[in-house]
Length: 417
Image (tube, rainbow, N blue to C red; front, side, top):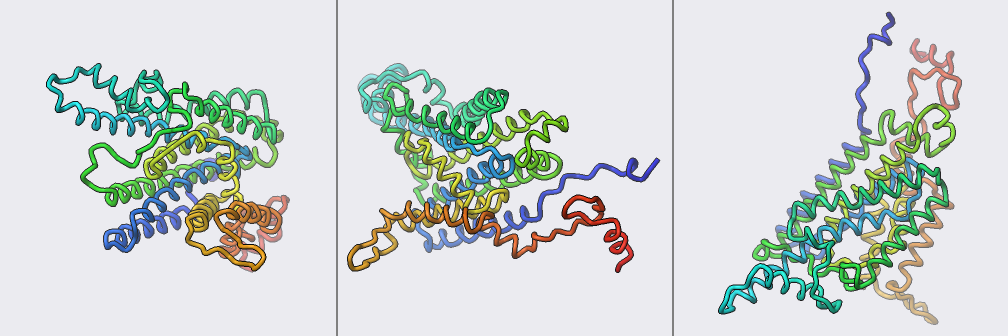
């Protein structure tokens, strides 16, 4: 029996860049915590950094489904928004319940549970002209159930949509159009007042965490920053594990030549459905952490343009590289806040004054075009040059394929020549 048969199976090893990323993330968390505790970083900046980490988590999910598997989904921000709505419903219900209980505490006769519920309904849905509590709010009083919906709602939607699309073997631009149509239909439905989610008013006051009123926004924002960093770290490790080893090779093969992978006997649809559903769940978790830091969510957050932005971030950072997606999302998020927050002075050109708040999206679009034409690997390609990934050491591969070592080269290397 040969040594190859007796050799134990190799463990799937995570890429070395994962450990580097985790170390940098830990350093960021420590630095921000120390600076915020010393009062050198404002609460708004901590919230901005926390939201940026959530967007980075959504970006790496997008990178797995697009950069590694070749599915250009233009609807992943719909899952992001659904996660935000799921946690936002509990936040708004619990906060309103506290307000209603305080206002009814001085009543001569203690209110019944039905009266409290009716008052909550009036407080939340009076803005859309009703006091009836919709069926979709049936579990809004329970945090564990709403946390379960953060995972279940995006996951089930992605599972059903992906099963219908992939079993029909819809690919390429047609699949992108379908995902965009799904997102558009969902956002248009949520804009209606009878959707049960307050129409275009959305859910507001999400930054007020029930039970933590005495802690202050500084402590709450720092806690959400830690939670966002933890979710990003765990999500990065999970997705790096998914795209490594044999599964990662299959996903890249599906991206490059789906027909050949199917011919080799792999059930392509199962791989695509698994990746699509998993990344939808990860994106939903990112949204559940993002919107309590943003304070408000409305249907505009689910509009197709948001998913297009997500694809642009990944392209700028460099798709097919998880750290590239993080770089792209972080860079664009921080620069967007910088340009649109009035921090950059307007540029007076004499005949015209360049107002950056108006021209930021144009600048972003030009950056996307420039990266696509001049640097297809994105910013992550610069990291590849630094780490010399252009010429990997393919020791032991003596096959005739392009890039492999020929028999003569292998013999020379083993002989130490």
